[in-house]
Structure formats: structure tokens, C-alpha cells
Image (cartoon, rainbow, N blue to C red; front, side):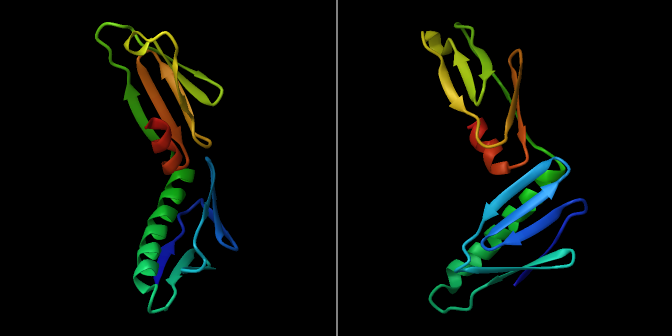
Length: 148
């Protein structure tokens, strides 16, 4: 059994097998395996309890620790953005990067005629200033997948 304190300025709602964290910068939703974990909210803390089945005990214990960290990341993300900074580097062919809708277009990569596209995942935002890219959002998973 793990007890997790809810950060100040964050509200957490548990509905079935889904947890929604809301803060000043936005909200995150995350599903959990209700066959392995039981979540209860008491005041300003959340209790994460794994099932006591002999066969699934190891798997449930691992899921318990993993979900605790995921909830901590969600609470951090809705109060402070997760941010990744990247820079385009080239030697001969000048690369240009631009954002169009939910895609990041990388033009003239290695002298290619057609631009490569990369999807922006979730509610992540991408800003391009010259050679520098700033990728930020409330979900760590979405920000890291967009920057990959």
C-alpha cells in the first residue's frame, strides 16, 4: 500500500479505472488496471493498493510503484510544464522546421525533396524560433513522444 500526497493547487478525481488530474495549466487523464490496483482518495492523499493474489502479487506490486510515479508526473505537469529543448544542426543542406496543425514539418533534410513529418502527440505545443525548438505540455509521455 502506497500513500501519495496530492500537490497544492491540484484536484484529483477517480472514476472507475480512470484518474483525472486538474491544475492551473490543464488536465491529464490516465487509466489503470483495476484488476491489479485499487485507488481510494481520502482528503488530500491517494492510497494505491495492490491486490493480494498469490499468482499476480509481483505484477501488482510493480504496477503499484509505476502508477505512483505516473500520478506524480501528472500532478507535476498540470502545475509546471514538462519541457524539452531541441536544436536543428546541419552541415551542408540548410534544414527548416515549421509547425502545421498537428504536424512538425522538417524540410530539406539531407537534401530530400519532400518534407518529413512528425506528429504532435496529445495537447503538446511546439514553438520554432530559428534553429531552436521548444516542446512543452502537461503530459510527460506526450512531450517525450513528440520530441522523439
